[in-house]
Length: 110
Image (tube, rainbow, N blue to C red; front, side):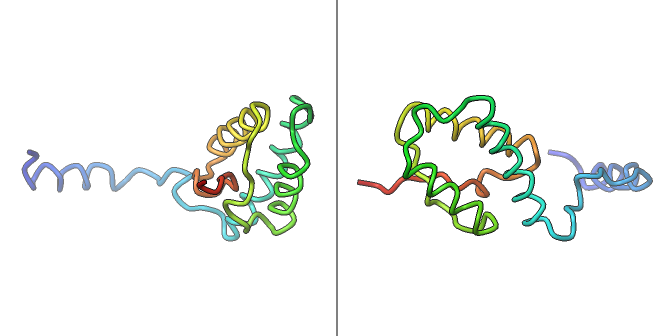
């Protein structure tokens, strides 16, 4: 266990350092995330194509984008290709600073 004095020294020692650029999100962070995600979606489709992607997957994902990325949990990957693309999108989103809760992917429990 660290003594209280140790924590106070750490706070004092780091007080002069600039905050990292990622500490404060942009003013309209939801719109920025959606813009980044939309771009990543286009890049992923260009790279991997649409083979194996069902129309319901494409349609529900397009609805997510059209909503300004506000509809959550409506895109259900069912095929291997859909699941692979969803995983790629999650990784690309995380690399852009989005939390996994931003992603539209979820399937109803049966």
